Image (cartoon, rainbow, N blue to C red; front, side):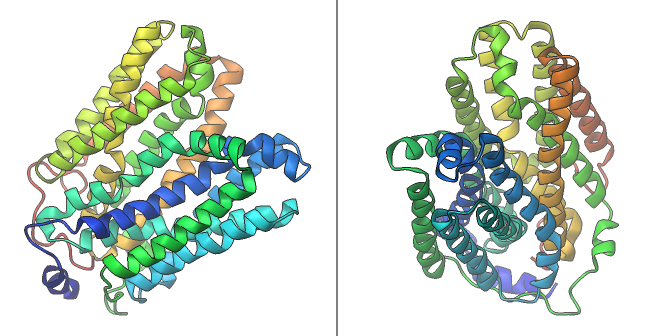
Length: 406
């Protein structure tokens, strides 16, 4: 409750603090590009470190592991710190560990640097949503979060192609130096445009167990896991999935369609999240489920794949904004801790989707993907539909009682 007055005093009621929110978006962009960069650089990294491409690929695994392990404990440990100091710490972490990756000539040292870059990302992701909400008045929180999250789909669309391009033109080490240079610019941007806020006092901090048992929190996290499992099974194995439609050589175009559509999804979500959060979540899940069912019946048709990718992209673009808004609203004073749980759920689903998708591919082939995806989405839809009291409430988001502690 103490922070509500602080938030309203700092927020501009009529205009979004666009520059500050874009600095948060840039932080998210750096998180994702740093994570995905090795995927586009595998041949150069394996040659440079004299390792196999499979071992080079573990640079992505080490990063994800760092995020998973660090998000909750670091968020709890830093709750009392001033918010901008925590944000700057995460960005400085990217500078240090991307630079270490660029300098390293030893595989183990490289993996350690990647692990700690992931640690920085885990803390950043648990911080960004709450920070964006705190920079604006309650009725602007959905739009602010949509803008602060725009870096993620941009990075997902551009990260691997960007890495491939940089690797081919300037080399993989220079690619990581470029990321370090971007973090230095971002530090200056944050100092200039992102306001500072106090951390939570000891009496405001909710224990982890209490946050987890806050009504609505577990329902949102369950939807996060089911939705992200469904998305990542298909997204991780998109190349083999589109091959039967004759699009094995056009994966770049397929992902571009998805990325552009996801941007449209973010724009739509920004317009709908305040008044129609529940119905937008349900519509997004239903649209993706219907697309998965159509994929199951006609995935060997290139036009169906292209149209399906567009619908899927639109339905997924606003997922981060919708789910984090619902989670923070439900958690109240425990929002930062709840959002760190979201980091674990999200990254855990990505890792599990890689394993589950691989098992499906080896056992039943790509034809099994749409049916598994549809089943997960229908489960998410049932959970979201049932959770109308606390997690996904109908009607306009309340402008009172939602921002205590943010």
